[in-house]
Length: 260
Image 1 (cartoon, rainbow, N blue to C red):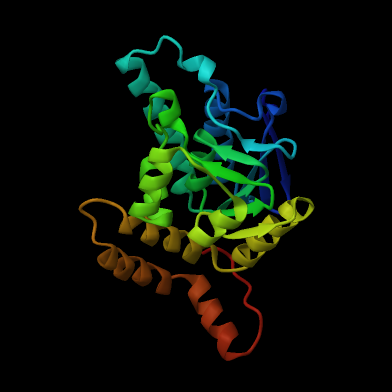
Image 2: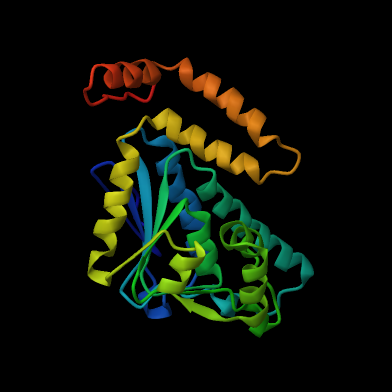
């Protein structure tokens, strides 16, 4: 893999580890981070040896403490639209990945950091994690999908409360609301993320991809999620993995999926 200036990357046991590497800036998102995230996601999509990705932040203080506000100075409406659309495109690439992506949230996940975590399929948090969308304090709103994904994860009323008050919540509250899937001590964070990933990657890869597509369909305007499920179920039963999975079940043995 190519070296990046703002990311640390490694592939271990089929997992692509992506670490935002701006610890001195609390891993704040700038244009370079967004561009390099876009590039490294190609490895997730196109490398057959990669089964999933775990995204985290360097150090134990922050996953991503927000966007790099210094880049916001002097923006007009046109530049703001371009900036937001770029973030939307990259985060949608994470959300739509046919392979699972888990956020390992270590410390602050605020603003763009919370949006990045929410774009991932699952969120495992350290017990010192903090989540929030405090953009209204700056006179703006979330620009990378936060107003939409927060509602999807925790519901309209609570999402509006957090978005309008700029309140920051702790890991336990995030788990209770459904924003975090699990909370563990900081020293156990990556192991927990790897454990959850391991439970997913032993399943049929094609079926996992269709689960993601079906759930995404629920939130798309003009798309019938139930009809999508019927079509993708039909595709699944035509795969070699279904034959193997059904056979393994009936024969009381572990399935050996090939992703075909």
